[in-house]
Image (cartoon, rainbow, N blue to C red; front, top):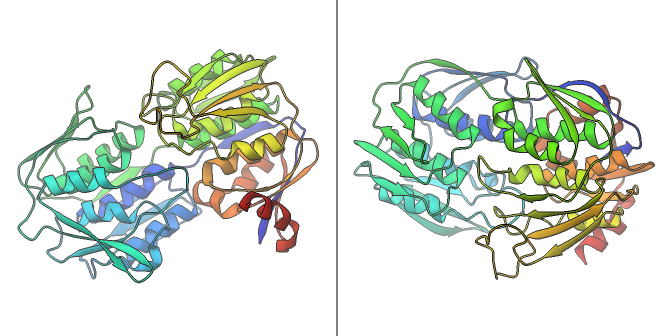
Length: 456
């Protein structure tokens, strides 16, 4: 077992570079499967999620060259050698389900992909995906296979453009529908689509590839059938989640951290919330500097939402920041129903956090009256104490890292593989700005008592 050993209690100071966006590059790799042309990506992060996606692409016929140090990846899929994604990829991440949209127009064979995976933060159903793809002419069914299930998809008679209205602006469903629409006859219109920066990055990539695709101001995306593709180069956008996480590390520890590559346009809502709590930031030509400028003020209300709202992946480290702010603040999670499980560990570390099943905020969300604890009240400031910690998912993992950086003694954090999914060279980056953090191998016994307590 590997653990992070963190001794906190000191301000973080310096400059660190945010990597390319996990939630962009993995989808772009899948989108490259639409054509038989070479695609070159720059600013590719060296993270586990990219590794898994590369292996998925290679499994079906992609040729990939990846210079991890330079962050450059070339991929070309001249022909498909298979349309079957093996069961060993079941639960690995959310990418296999997107293979359906990318491959429907490129093969007459049945496409078989395993069930979706990812962090256990609440239901992420694929019914929006399936309904949209079926409107385009696909036939999709779920079958039990061995211990896991798989989705079988086909469009033997080809796909036809359609007008599709998503019940919720789901990022994954929007991406899958866009990919399938590229080879569907005629024009496809997606209404109530997600418009996250990662979606825009996908649209820009596809336009370079040869697709006629555009986005209107009312969450409508239009895609025309494409026959001709071309070789392209594409720079992956910066990871706005990592940029925010590193910035919060500087503010929470009462330090000053410049995050190179942080993009102002992608972080407007996040920066507004920082200003509300009296945290400092300065936007510069090549990034954003985050700093502590005095006592943090609580008494704010945050409601997570789809873009351009406050991102659900920002709330975990922000909750740690609120535990150090004067007053009571409310956080209402409207994207995933089970995303506050991590706060139990923060309470063990000393944070004053209470969870509620009601919608605490300006509006009722789709989880109203469903008995999910999807609102919390955070009171501060409270000193945090070092603990042995088990990470349950990726974003909770960084919240624990941040809490450990605030605690005065040594915390041992296991479940490091979750962090590897989305944070490139985290130990090196934190060390470069003054954190006392090491990654070590250890026996399982050091964390067995906490694992048992959490399981119980």
